[in-house]
View (cartoon, rainbow, N blue to C red):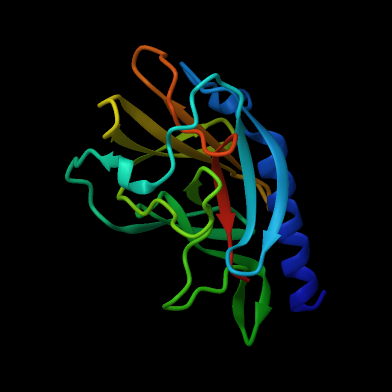
Length: 216
């Protein structure tokens, strides 16, 4: 297969996997915010965005990042790799994102093909965009942990936030599941929760958040 075919296949697999495996058996949240994958649309500036609509009764009072304050926890900005037999994924604690996905068995000029085309002006893949805003992703530094669950390597990111409107606190958890076998599939799950299970007022035009991939 040529480079374009490889990239198209891998991106299709990623998009399908994200849409079908959010909150699977591997990532059962303790107190989840109920979300559903509503649409999958492409934008020229930000690549693909999987939009997650809020099904709670929260009021539409969250409109900008200025009303959201990250709770500082002395987390360190760093990158680290997780790999299996066919790919190497580079994670970034900034935004709990992915900066590189290299395919070990598909080479170009003797080097593994990277399906993420990053440059100095582009953002990493799988950043979160709150509400229906596709221009300002969350780029706070997350804490992380790595664990093994059978044939799955689980990478978990977490970050605590507070709303300026009412002082309510909540945690955004983003988890990736990577097969330890020779598979290109991996899973992404996002959970937004409070300690007491109360409603989180993150809702702009019926959207809670989007997961961005791009630009490509």
